[in-house]
Every structure is written in C-alpha cells, then in structure tokens.
Length: 375
Image (cartoon, rainbow, N blue to C red; front, side, top):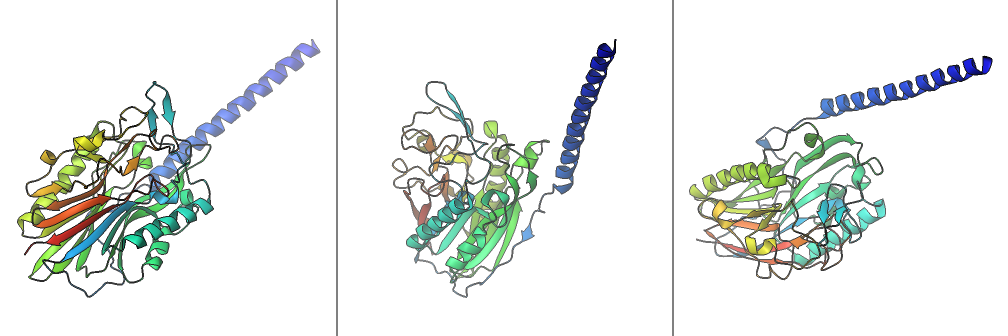
C-alpha cells in the first residue's frame, strides 16, 4: 500500500513539474511576443537624412561620372556561409535551407568588410550606394561597418538611412539573429543639397513584420549646373515575398517618384538591390544545379514608368550579381541571377558592368555605372 501511494505521489509531483515547465514556457513566449510588439515601430515616411562631410563640388552636364551599388551582406556572406531564411531546391528535388542566423565570427565580419572596402576603393567611383551596412548588431558581432566604410573614404560625403531596427530576434534558436541596427549607406564626392528617407510598403502580418526589414529608399538631390537636379536613389526592396505582392506595391511607389522627378525635368538614377531579376533573360541566364526559386520576381522594362529604363549590364549574362544563400557557394551549383543594378531616366546616358568578385565577401557582386547627364 505504501509503495502504491509513493508511486502515486511521484506521479503527481512529476505532473506538477511538467505543468510548471509548460506554464513557464507559455509565460515566456507570451512575454517575448509582448516585448517584440512593444519594441516594434516603423520610421516615419519623408524623414530628413543628415549629410555628413558634404562636398561643395557641383555636377555638370556632358561629363562622365561613375557610381557603384553593392549589397555587402552585413559582412557575413563568405563563400561558406548560408542564411537561415533562405530556402531552395536542388534539381533532383532535394530541399535546401540555410544554416546560420548571424555571421560565423567577428573575425569573418571584419575580413569581409575589409574586402568590400578594398573592392570599392579599386573602383574609385564618384558615388557609392551600399545596402545591408550594420551599425550595431548582434548578427555582425557589433562591428560598426558604417564607421569602417566612412573612415575608409574620408573625402566623401556620407548619408545613412536606417532600414532594419529590431529588438532581439530569438531565432533560429540554435543561432539567434539578435538585435539589429542597419541600413543604406550613400557616399558622394559631389554636393548633396538635401536627402530624405522614403518608406516602402512592407508586410505587416504578425510574424513577418518582426523578421523583415523596415524597407525604404533614400532620395538624394544633387545640384547640376543649369538649375536642374540629379535625383539619386538607393533602393533595397523586399526579398522574402512569395509571389512578389509586396514588391509590386514597392515598385508602384518607386515608379511614382521616378515619374514625378523626370517630368519635372530632373535627371533620375536609381541603384540598389531590387530583389527582382532585372529582365527575363537575366532571371535564368546562368547554369546551376538548383531549381528556379520562389524568392525571385522578374522586373521587366514594361513595368517601369515612361522615360525610365533598366541599364542592362554589358556582361549581364556572364557575371551574376546575386547567389542563393540556402547553401554555401560553389560556382555552377548555386542558383545565381542579376538583381542588383541601375535604372535611369532618358536624359541620362549610361552603361553598366557587373563586377566579378566570385561572391568572395558577400552574396552579391557590385555593379558599376558610367553615366553622363545630357545637356
């Protein structure tokens, strides 16, 4: 009898322990959701951006200038790196998914950031439009990439637009992404009269809004001799957007801005990571051992407002600008395409070149633009 009562008591005690653990888990999850909700906010549209170290040089018509766009991938994406939010499928049907939530180490972030800076220095562009530049983030071990880049190019004016500000993301559980402060960094050798941050539409569904960026584009106005302006835009559209629904809304806003500026007589150049394949040929123009992924939408010339064109790189079918990050990089294995580049108005004469780094420091390759403002 005593043994039976003892076993019953042990069962009751074990049940209480299990219930207590379940209750603690429920309270933790509820508390974490409340914490994330309280920390969540969107930066107001039409926010004025600070211009550091502004130049006094003014642009002229009829002269050749250069610009480069580059997504540096918060210093994480060496060739061996794969990212937890990226998924794919091999040609034989094998499903793939990225491994890491943050960079592998602080040393890898410093190495990749330095290599990005060296690559940019070699191109010696008049304008640099950079994406995924971290200021103070767990995912990049708090390496201040913005400071590192600005210090490497002291002769340039600098403009920063925050597009990722999150509380501590406790996912993936094995390698949490953590808290993030990151954005778009613009460097200019020429005078910027004013700059503002424009907010893109984003997915506000309950979970996605915590994991996606506060997507935006920065609009910079540069005086041109003759009373016109160059409207230079750095854009980073949504990536994890099945079916491209949010990206379509983002393109609608960008089109409206480009059309208004062009009709006002200004020059318009948009550079960045469009997270769209830039043209149908580039969408599937490279050999791989993976199927065409769901995250790729295609941007065609017909979708752009009148007077605005995609600058097709001269080597667009030889050098891709983006690799799938669901697996580590092996040339000819990963899906690759062209999602980085430039759009220009018809009063800008331009040519582009995709720069082949073989994805050594990022999951993106830079793109260089040579352009001339028509008289």
